Length: 160
Image (cartoon, rainbow, N blue to C red; front, side):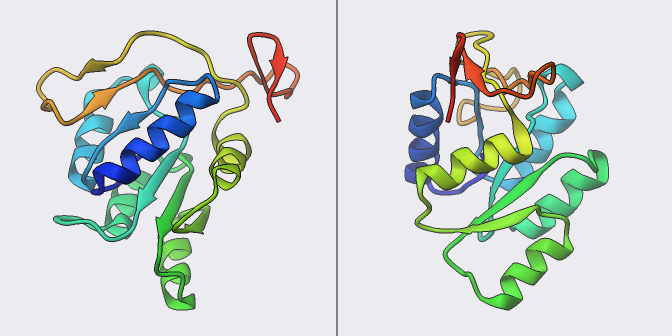
């Protein structure tokens, strides 16, 4: 999740944790998202990115363009209160899968996770800071995909 609002980051973290998936990488700038992707190996890279559009230093469209230059198959979902046709078109033009309006519903975020990013959540490790990237970046293990049967579940319980 890339968003310059601490409140929005906390809301996303709480939602994802509630699903039994405390597995989100939370950063407050596009530049930190790029730093994270540069510093991680393939196993630790997220399966989906939720990207705020209006942030200091580097906006969501520019960050997405740079992320997708490195990882063209990475699904990015835009988050914004600016749902004008021009903004939506700009987001899709840089490669975002879709744009969700703020305030968003938990069901929209969950649907996007399962549609674009993950079918099952798996706990891999406790939260920890990434060495060298600063205390305001927290790594929680990433979503993982169970491709064998395509059924979303957590600990054997179907996730709807």
